[in-house]
Every structure is written in structure tokens, then in C-alpha cells.
Length: 280
Image 1: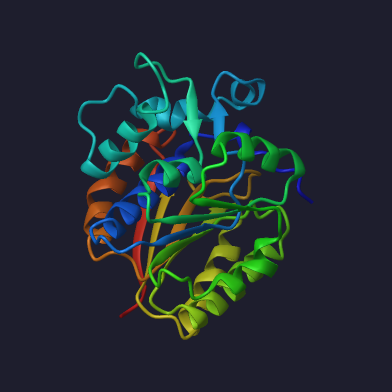
Image 2: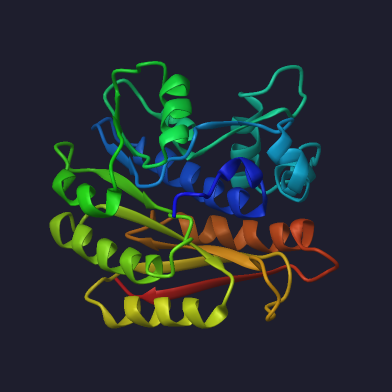
């Protein structure tokens, strides 16, 4: 249970999609002076060395952020993403990759608040060191599925919840939908981003069906594939299901995903999906 370490996968194509969307949503929330909160259900270690043994072993970042690092034709959403990653690296050299907690912290203002959940005993210690006792951050060594409902509705009445477990446990596919629905019942105007991996397409079809059958509304799906679906082991694609997305997000992804599918796909197998799961 808790064996997953994101250090093997930091900066891969799934992170490119997830973090490009995350940055777009947070920047949109900043258009208003009113404070907002950000909740990360599975925060991870916060900052990853791309020179670590784990990163070198898989080399996944090379077909992710590494493939975009020197490009000069990036769509606007990818420029914002790449420039933010550059702020964590010196002299233009790609050596470190920030996870979603540090990306959010980098973008947040003094009035905004961050709630980070991490259950892994080693990861939370690394995360605590990366956060550096920032007073805007509440670090929670808890199971977010069991605890995060108490945060809703947030005091700020504006915010984003990122739900992105590792899906090591097959029950996570059911748990994420149940958690999303319960969170939305308590905070209907919030924005929610649910990340998923495509390992078995049938599981994603079932996840989409459950969301479509729910009382949720205004739901969009954005998916990026690196290789074609198959019965072989491993993740072929990943996506985000976003509830109450910024009105600007779909247009940004229509410009972004075709480019990423071409640049980050392997052997010409890159693909993408943009789908309105539920209308407003």
C-alpha cells in the first residue's frame, strides 16, 4: 500500500498535462483579489531531483518536460508551465522538478491558503522540508479521503481541490468519485481537478459513466496519450476531469493538447481527448 514514489515519474508527460492545467486554474483564481484555498489530496515530496537514482532509472522526464525545455513554439499554456519549472532551476539547466504543492505555493499570494495531505512517512518529511514552515500552508499527515471533507466549505469560499492518488489500490477508482461527489455537495462552487491514469481503459470508461450519472454539472475531461491503448502493462495515457473549470480552460487545452500529443507521443502514437462530460 503506500509504496508509490513519484520521484520515478516526476516531469513525465502526465505531469506536463496535470501541471499545465493546475497553473491555468490557479492563475484564473488570482484574477480576483479575494483569497482562495488550494487542497492537494496526495501531495508527494514537493520537489524532485531529475539527477536522482530514481529519475535516471526511468528517464521519463526526457519525454515530458525535457522534450519541451528548449522548444520555441510552445502554446501559451505550455509556456506558462515551462517558465514556472525554469524558476526552480538555475542557469537554464533542467535539474529539478516541482510537484503540485510547490507549483501552487509558488503561485499563491499572501492571502491564499494551502492544505497538503500526504500519508507516506518518508514523503511527508521531505515535503515539510520543502515547504520551509510557510505560514500559508497546513501540512496534514492524514488520509485525505477520510479527512478532507471537514475542510469544506473553505473559509475563503473560493478554491481548487486536486485529487490525484497513485491508484495503487483498485478501490481508488471508486473512492475518487465518491470523494468528489461528497466534496461538491459541501462546496458546490469550488473547482475540482481529478487526475486519472489510463492503465486499463475499461476502468476509465466506468469512471466517466459514474460521473456522468451523478448530480455533478459543468464537467470537462482532458486526456493526453503517449502510446495507443493496449493490454500491455503500464500507463498509456492520463487525464484530468475538471468540475467547474475556468471558462478559459477548454480553449487553452484545444490549443495545447494537439501540440503535446505530437511532441510527447512515442513513435507517432500520441493522442488526446477533450470532452464535455456534463453541461453547466
